[in-house]
Length: 185
Ligand SMILES: [Zn+2]
Image (tube, rainbow, N blue to C red; front, side, top):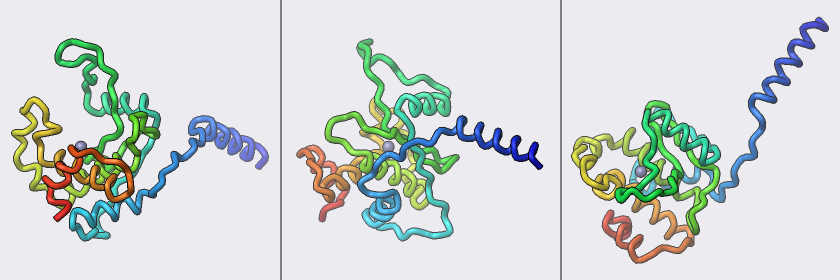
């Protein structure tokens, strides 16, 4: 019995060492709130039979490595003119794992974790509730898919709409995006 206890203790210790308790990043609005808010803006009735996405937060460096590993590509380190750029990745949604991977901090001025989570939740709803938005993939061949793809335009506009509705500053450009998606009638 004693031996077993020691073994268990060792395993427990190892478990503690292997997965150090990480401080949960502070979200002003919790995930369930963001999930329901996004659904209501998209006019979606949440189906309890459909699995909800998991939210996984990690330091940005880890997020970048994970993204590159999952995509099997390295993100570009230079812009189209060959100038070095600092890669920024706030988050991404992976359909296969139904997971939203997020940086635990947003270093860009004025931006919030919440609006980025909302952006990724939009992609979840698009995939599970309105997959027809992905029928036409020709936009991916355009120079900037983030502007030309309808799913990106919708996610970006709802992200800006979140800012507007939660007392965060928005620009005239943001407002235009919000109007273009008829989020304000
Ligand atoms: Zn997106």
